[in-house]
Length: 553
Image (cartoon, rainbow, N blue to C red; front, side):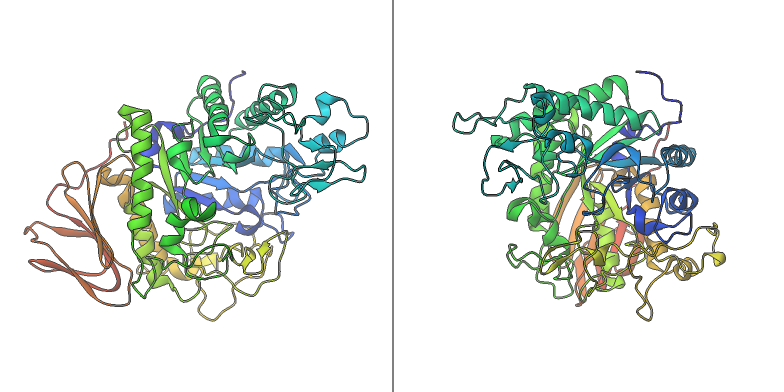
């Protein structure tokens, strides 16, 4: 491979300390005045992201697309969609971000394309050669769950009907289903080769990594995902050989499988059935906007009622840590790969949703930045932007009658940036209606308020970066999982985190040494034998071990 001309931020070398920021590109900032966020707008807001302290910016798909699923229906993997700019704009964004120590991560939709992709148009043409047709999965007749074609055949969709599944083969063959091909058949091999070509194309333009959409969906009928894991292990080896330092982040929802398979990180996600989705939902879900009729009712820990628990989440996290360590005995608490903990995302309600307000969200953010995972901050959650209910479906946002994603995708609330150091010539996005509720948060107002959620988030990120006891690879001892919750961090157990997300005051009994001090907190006070916690409060307490400064050499 030819050398990469653009400067690269080697994210893989410092997984333990990374803080990721998800920027929904069409909603973030508009650089050309057409009303839709774009790459120029994002580049002009990099100084803000650097001030906030994030290390990685993940962009949702920004490739050519008919946008029937907001870009997750890709029609050209190698070209930036005109509404976002050009390939040159992407390269310029990567270069400007690298100058600020930030890596840009793109979204790779690996399991399917749009039905308007040239590959699919060629494959669905009558008389198409097998080498072309076998890029997708075809049945000679309609079948349940498949999409019928005018010629009587059918194709298998990977998510929505207009997203035909790319053929990576089947782990198990069946003579009664002749369309099943082995994973090393020509069609599956061509699609694997296409993945390396796509990644190489963007790596050469300065991209620091990829977040892989539906990463577990590639090989079909794959018990325990053996063949899918083998595929990603091979791709990780290819990346390490040709593009060292770049990272792969999975949307898999099962770090116990995906990280040992080669991903640098996997995020807990809210969907994927009761097993995979419950750990994240048990933290944040409060009925605000993205609710599936298939999910059982479950109280969330970060709600005022105080009826939830960290138990489900902590158990899933520990299971993943043990699996990562077993796969690599030198991994410790995840140094061969980390577990991502998101505040929200483009498919899930924000932290501020339903009855939960920004004050309550502060405690949730304290958990995200002090637990041994990779914090994944969804744009606007640092301000307490709320899930906006009542929006009409837009670009495929509605999945079920009560599962409307548009409310999580509203424009970033910048406010009057002339009052801040971040005053570029870009304008706000109008991709969706903004939150016009009286008192709705915006960045400019919070920048002027040192007690705002914005400044608290920045302080949490700063503390996370400078204190190695908060690294993803540093130990945790969970002491209590309810109200309050508490845990110790650091090899010497010298950092205590206590969290009270409920509407009731609480106290934490602890014989505190005289030198104990709160490094960061909200509504907490140290007594001699206990920590007093107001409603919606937390404290990060140094018990006497010196606050460490991270070695950046």
